[in-house]
Amino acid sequence: MSQYHSRRSWVIWLSFLVAIVLQIMPWPEQFFVFRPTLLFLCLIYWLLALPHRISVGTGFVLGVITDLLHGSILGAHALAFSMISFLVAFKFQLIRNMSLWQQALVVLGLSSLMNLCVFLAHVVLPKTAFHPEVFWNGVVNGILWPWLFLLMRKIRRQFSVR
Image (tube, rainbow, N blue to C red):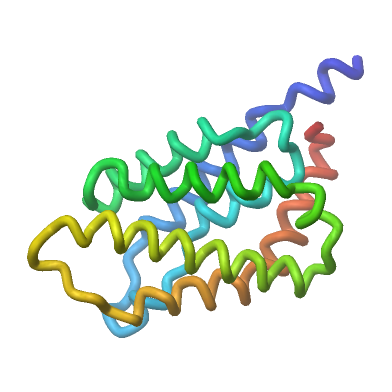
């Protein structure tokens, strides 16, 4: 019976699917820079909650999916998601034991680092210009983190995902 309760992987993958659907929803042009990266936030949550089930490989796969959805250079988001996944998996105990607002600051920094990695991958193109607006995404992700964390924790506990 306990093995049945501990094998609820479908909840994890359903949360990733919902995040993908919410991420590809159209936004008004003036608010496009404030669009949160929900797939990235879900990845960070599951890396902190279940580091033995979610890994750097999952981050890579979700990054490739993000590249395909955004139409960006194939591998730009995959590299960034993999790097951030490694950092979070490496220091998950430290991040997990922080208060929620400290975790929000860490997520803000990780999200900004992800945006910087994607930008540096796009610098290879000759017509790429620097737009500081891309870092607003990190601020929005940091603000959104406490609510997403509490929602995901409630879902994880309700479905007994271990």
